[in-house]
View 1 (cartoon, rainbow, N blue to C red):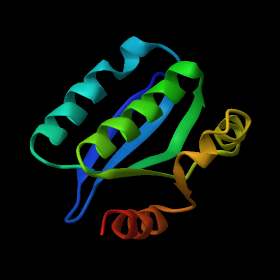
View 2 (view 1 turned 45 degrees about the vertical axis):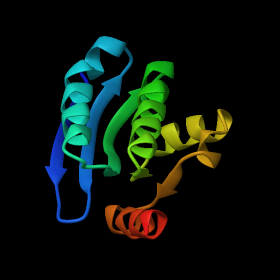
View 3 (view 1 turned 180 degrees about the vertical axis):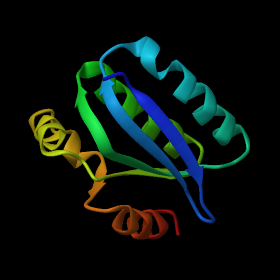
View 4 (view 1 turned 90 degrees about the horizontal axis):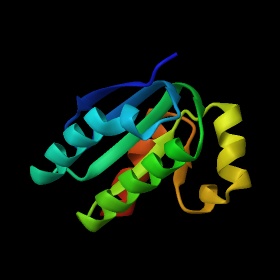
Length: 118
């Protein structure tokens, strides 16, 4: 299953919906082009919804780190939500669960996001 993404701009934040498997850097190029375009328009609050995600390796982890870093550099934040168990385990093993704010649902993530940037 190839990696795909859908971007939903909401009133106070933007949702990055990820589906499939992210195992090669080239798979995320189009997503980063759109992400950088959003940042250039001062959109800097993101919820990364991973409910449709199947698998990721270090490339996927790097993608998440880049999103978080760029959002924070732009004065915003990124919250990850709906993380499948296999990926949640990967975040724990790599200790990235201490860096990312991980929420159970998009609603919870939006609430965390608003608290983090207020």
